[in-house]
Each structure stands twice: as C-alpha cells, then as structure tokens.
Length: 196
Image (cartoon, rainbow, N blue to C red; front, side, top):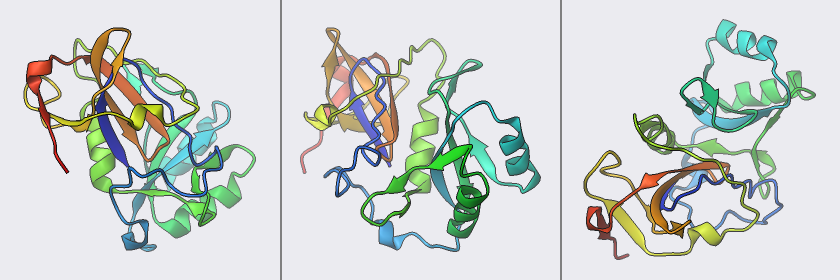
C-alpha cells in the first residue's frame, strides 16, 4: 500500500514483522479482493547480494524493482517483485535461505501490494533535485496527523499525513507498511486538507 504524508525522513515500517495481529488502520484496499492468479506486487528481503536470484527473476520474466536514488539502493536488501501468488510461494520455497517474503501475519501468507499503490510509490521516487532519506520506525507514530493532498510542485497529486520532522514539512511515501521514504520540504500553501 502507498501511504503518503508530509515529513522530512524516510520511514521503514515492518509492521508485518513486528507481529501486529492486524494491519494498522490505514488500509486502503481489501486484500481479499486481490486475485491469486493475477500478478501482484510483493515485497521481499534478499539477505545478501544474490545475483543468482535476480538472474532467476529475469530468466522467468518476473518483474522486479528495488527503490534507488541515483544508482544506490534506498533500502538495504529490499526488492519488490510482480508475480502470481503461486509464483511468490514457489520463490519463497526455492530461495528460503536467501530471501524472505513479507507476509500478512494474520493470514500467514505473502502480502500482495495493489498496482496503484506500487505505481504511486515509484512515481514520486527519483524526482531530480529531491532528497530521500530512509528512517527505521518501530511504532506507527508517523500515521498520526492531518490527511492532505499536494496541489502543486513536484509531488502534485500525492496524498497523505502531515508530519513535521527536523522542523520541515516533508512528503512521506510508503508501501504496504513495509517501506517508506521522505522527500524534500513541501510548502504549506501546496497542501489541501482532506476531510473524511
């Protein structure tokens, strides 16, 4: 899932790994509505640099993406793959010592990420002249705040929660409670409050 908010740090939020019984209340889709036969995005952690895994994904025509800024990974060992549920189960089984698939703790199965969420996560990454900083978060404090939509500037169209970190408002974009990044300062006049 993509969650966009205003802040000045990148967030890494492994709630699935922290053992929460349910997904935090910022769910934007119904996971049961995702098909097991259609390709979906999944988050995976590859424990060490494993070119053979990437070669396997390329050979089997499994789309993959690692968030980078320039030529450097934004998150260590984090990749996203687009495949069917059966394929992600097979990958999990075949590469169980080299990679971990982020999962829904309650369902005990891989957590599918909707395409729209993944597109938004990728869309706002690598905008020229912007700063992106990862930050590990052990709680869900970043979810508290006023929901806004960005009306102008390089992040126009993004929605999320206003957060002030290090004295600046910044846009925080996250996906599926697995990873997030913060961008540069967003002026207050570029923000519209969203009422629910």
